[in-house]
Structure formats: structure tokens, C-alpha cells
Amino acid sequence: MSDKVVLKTSPAIMTQEKDAWVVQLPRFGAEGNHFHTYGLLTPYFKGLTEGKLMATKCVNAKCPIGHGAGELWLPPRADCPDCHQPMMWEQIKNPAGYIYTFTYVERGGQGLEIECPYYQIDVKIPGVATIVKSYLLDRKPIKIGDRVKAGFRTGKDATHTNLDLYWELIS
Ligand SMILES: [Zn+2]
Image (cartoon, rainbow, N blue to C red; front, side, top):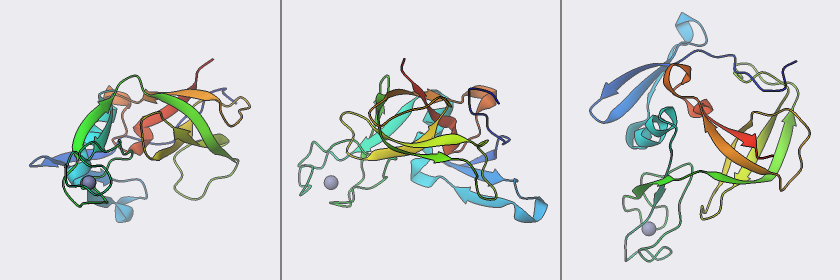
């Protein structure tokens, strides 16, 4: 067993319609091909494949919560949940945070593309209003509060899914 988690996946087939990616996941046999568009969230998925973590924030001065200077949301929202206006994209530079909570997954359900065992972790990033759920690359024992940094599957390693974002322990 490797000390790093590996994926049991292959890159999704991508096409582009205007500014939006359309992803085809041929992972469950030909009859199970799944198509969907990333729509307005395409910049998030494109960012992952370029090693960038893209979040959104509300800059509407009339927003009842953000008042024009909203916090970052991750995963991003195309529109603000509080005022329903389009949000702005912003890159989180050198993304890092700490493990807010975690689950040790020993046995996954059908279709899981992460080799078990692995840690599914919730990450709190300073300045981000939401808590990100993802997976930890490391398999060694962890505890709540351990610091982690983001890693990305880019280029030919990119899956074009949310699996392109992972976390590593900062030792
Ligand atoms: Zn708002």
C-alpha cells in the first residue's frame, strides 16, 4: 500500500459550448455515459487544471450580507445566495488551511474513484466563508487542526472533475 492515495480514474472527455465546458464521463460503460455542463462554474474547473483555486465573492453594494465586500465562497457560486446577483471570481493564492474535521474511508461505494483507504477532509481556509470537502493525499494518521495545502492534477493528469483538487499535509 502506497503512502499516497491514488485515483482509479481516467480523464473525462471535454467539449466547449461558448464559455462553458461540457463534461462526458464514460465511467460506467457505454450505456452509463453521463453528460453535464459546468456552466457558469467552468472557471473553477479550468482553474484546477491550471493549478489555480478559483473562488467567488459578492461585490454588490446593496447585498444585505456582504455589503459590497463579501467573503470568498468555495466551492464557488455563480450568483450570491444572499442578493442573487452575479459574484466575482478571485484566485486564492497559495491555498492552505487546516483540517476542520475528517472521515477515514476504508470502503467506498460503487463508482468511487479514489483508492481506499483515504481521508475525506473538510478544510477551513482563512478568508473563505465556506468549508471545502475534498481528499487528503497522505495516508499517515492525522488529527483535527493539522495544516494542509492544496495540490492540483494538471495537464495530462487532470480528470476535469473536482478530483483535480486534493490536499497534502504541511509537515
Ligand atoms: Zn450578495
